[in-house]
Length: 163
Image (cartoon, rainbow, N blue to C red; front, side, top):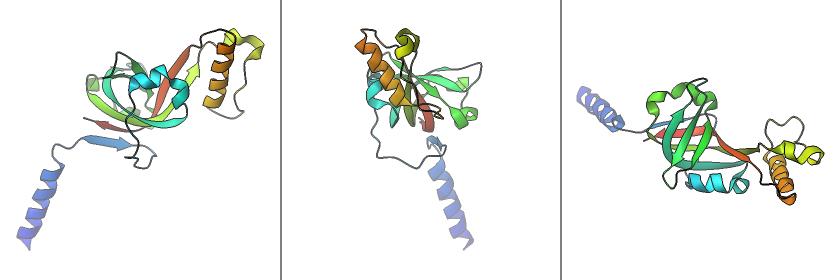
């Protein structure tokens, strides 16, 4: 009996060695989500707004001031995406810069040149922290006026895996 317990304990320890670090905050396992290229997110943000996305890239920069955000560079291009760490911020540090990470979270964007629309700017829904439908309307209104919308894309992190 003691031998069986010892063998089981050793097997559990060996099986956990070398595994990747995976953490999640308030999200169910979603292995069915395909990996999206960071370049696609950044160049087509209106297509992905308010959708859960999964990306893989290299942690290019960790914020040294607040520690609540990072930039992740895609392997598909020189483009990076801003990642808001939220409740998982305490699990990240500057030592992770250069490491490959798989991220899953809500993709959102903000149009930063709304003032160029003046009074014609669509309002976002009252009580909403972020409303990509309103951001999309602003982007379309800017385009209709011949103004290129300045879009700042970001991912609100829900789950990650360090490779």
